[in-house]
Length: 161
Image (cartoon, rainbow, N blue to C red; front, side):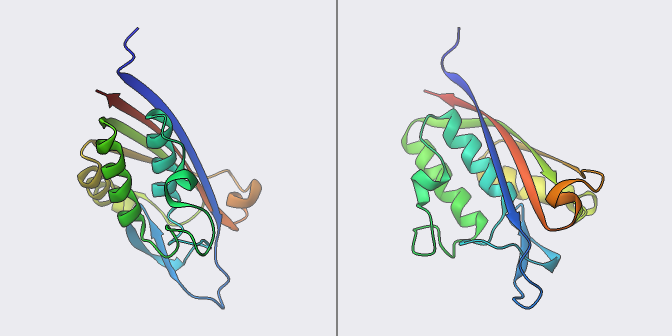
């Protein structure tokens, strides 16, 4: 068994912010049309799921372990890009290098297709490995199907030296 390669899983979900509280919709470090997501940071579910997957694979806890939880945490107000960059620094400090990350976005909006390559390119540049994005709806079922929010799952393969 090769213990230098590890797999981690991450999941994140957030409710869309109230229309009366306009904020940018951030997903995969990019700004999209439409009202944003509730959260202490920018609410980027793609990045949050990726961070949990990366830290899980490296056996370094989760996003709350690294950034804290709540409005007064270290992660409060941070962009997804800044959080992911900080996570990469943390992984490298622990001799961990991501090899590949796959993310599935679950929700009705925004439509990933027109900007998939741009999002994958941006995330891959930050992580230093291939990042693959897919998207699905839930055929009208659950909070994502009802348009109340958005979710993402991520799987990361990490090499530990």
